[in-house]
Length: 154
Image (cartoon, rainbow, N blue to C red):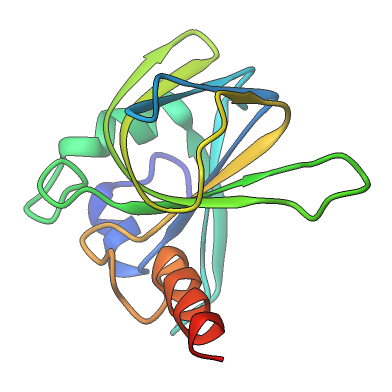
């Protein structure tokens, strides 16, 4: 998609994935993705399947672009960790704000919505909801919260 715009990403209701070699949290108030991939993957399922990538720098530059920006309406995200073989992978649902990119490290301020944020971990992925639609039907964090509510009712 070349030099993708905020409007193009919003129009396709793109979800985003950022991967990193490790993560550190700052007392549950921030996360830092270290050894971050230089590209942020985006994808959409409907109405038209789209997959691509943009530089993580461009993703951060687009954070405050447009009326429905992530700055105006911070997205929810699911942080997924690769765990040792004897345990199932853990997930934490967060709201992310104020990205700060320094080389291959990206820091977000966070509010933890569900799960427990570890002080540090190895490889991880951050799945970020669409621009301007943190509770849309395709919201990963929204689906995760609905599944947990169903589990608690049983």
